[in-house]
Length: 377
Ligand code: SIN
Ligand code: CO
Image 1 (tube, rainbow, N blue to C red):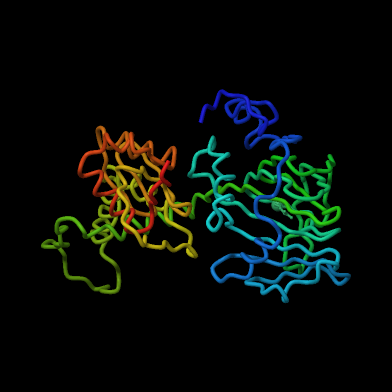
Image 2 (cartoon, rainbow, N blue to C red):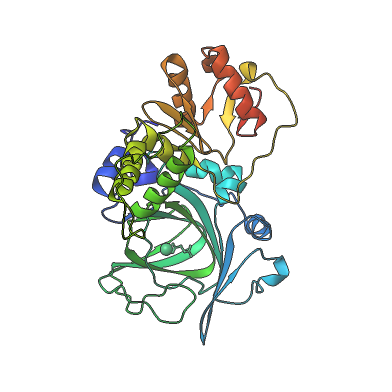
């Protein structure tokens, strides 16, 4: 993607300028970010997704007594009638299940893949919304169908209404108000409070980002580092020829504590160990993702390849990562694999430069269902 090129998606700004001036800093309202936008996933398709096992969905309703929250899957008859006001159906991870959803997410790949989370779609009847709240991640709220009135504000008071199944700000302090129509988009940085209320039947697409918590990231990487320990050569065994006789046998020997500390520090100090564990953790598919192996055997070299929409691929100086696995890569093959991660596809011409080793790796990814053949031109 040319990040210097101005785009209607960002209100006539280039991605480079948007990232400098707004990303993680201040909201941006874009009228007609996608001119003439028509919801590519209509209501019936969204309801069908919400009825499936393995698709994360929630139903939020406002009642006189407060807010209610139910988790899917929802058969159609489990959803309130369309004529009933003030209910919202939220479907998470639509990019994993629908090609148009994935294609929309790809428009936002001027942000690193490691930060991109998913496409969530909300359907609401008149007056519906999820209440005033703030999120801990950046979000682009793209209006896809009907109208939604958004009120937003920098929230100083984070206190929540007690005893609710959803997070509702007790003292919402709106500063600005906008009515979004199809194709309009609102970008919000983390912690900006927002409340969106449907004006008539309404669908909003949320392009959401993930912001890892440092401890959570440390936990995920340490687990992987721990798993990889012991895979290499035999490590030394604790020896204590100078251990003296003790009167307090319950005390842990200092030398044993030092021995363990050295083990941990050495494990972390190994070259690339942290980078590799992080790359694997970042590309690990979500728990509800599984891949369908192919039913045919096309000639990938002739057609070119594209990543399956559920595949997550990234790279760093030494490795490429795909769906939680890491591969060492260098030279021409590394260039090719990095291109696959950046573009999510490789043409037949680009594949012509692959070594036999790279081709057989691509074929094994194809067999796992992680890659697909490009449709014939
Ligand atoms: C919605 O689409 O109703 C909610 C999206 C959000 O507030 O993050
Ligand atoms: Co929100």
